[in-house]
Image 1 (cartoon, rainbow, N blue to C red):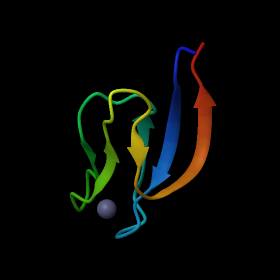
Image 2 (cartoon, rainbow, N blue to C red):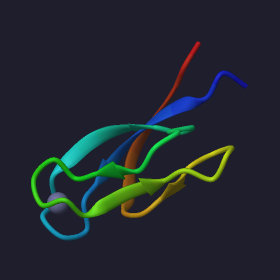
Image 3 (cartoon, helix red, strand yellow):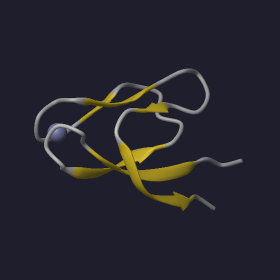
Length: 57
Ligand SMILES: [Zn+2]
């Protein structure tokens, strides 16, 4: 599994941005700073609505 990318909609401001599924650092919303992904050592925990997922290959 090479991992995948998720398009995540921020629950606070509806900004959408791309988050790597195995992000190794906290990903925050570029607009309001809401935490969108928290690293776990494996697949990151996504906070917010996943609008779309793109498999990396
Ligand atoms: Zn936001």
